[in-house]
Length: 357
Image 1: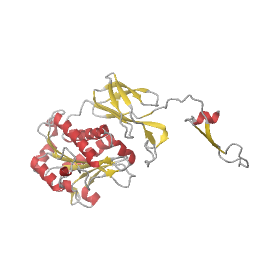
Image 2: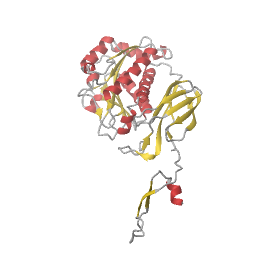
Image 3: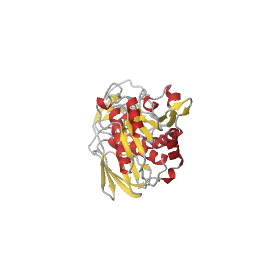
């Protein structure tokens, strides 16, 4: 079996652009069925099994459309789909896959958000050098798509102290991705967005294209996050990121001149996404209730994602403001000259112009 994979590793240049014909890929969306080994985040309603499955199904359809022979370990999310890892490995071996990939997200105390790709390690080295090669490719692709804080390629035994069960008995190169951290609440909200999951599937696909030596796609992606610069979220966020500012729900983003619209969800992520775009210059129009429309130019490049994050400006409230409270209070005596003066109004005020009034 090793001889077969070494051949693929050494002569990828014979494969044609975006044509996976003759290549066999096995996809494992991790977990399944909301069982005890699933991961649930009450604050956002996130289930890892659901997220992994949607990423896997997107990847499955992408690969099929490019001519690959693909098998996926599950297509639904029930207890019956949560197969023993040894059964999944046996299925991949019987399928005679050229490459195996297991899709996951990570979790640890809610204060991290990096990308890590695992490969099986034996005696301090990758059992399959090709798996290490893919791990190094994929860590960068997924990191770029999810814009996490860092990316790592790790042998499972050195990092975890054991071999991952889903990689343990494979007879072909395989990797397991932990694309981001689902218990980091800003990321958990993003992972609730179907298009955000699709974008990670694109990153895995791009990794497979590189690994098998196919010519890169000529199409590109435009994506971004829309936020309110005046509101701070009420959950933990990592310093040095934009996650402190509140994402905007239910946005409508129009791509011109194609007149394609993206409708943002209500899952507190502010994410928008357009894929499979021809390279060139476009215009985006952003609309959201209580915010001024925002129009700006964007560019699309083949085989990459260009991000355009935006802070939206609230529609001005032209009503006459009323003071609701103040400190020191009206008529209060014996107030220190060093006391801070605080005035609260019934509508949002521009801090700078109010202070200068």
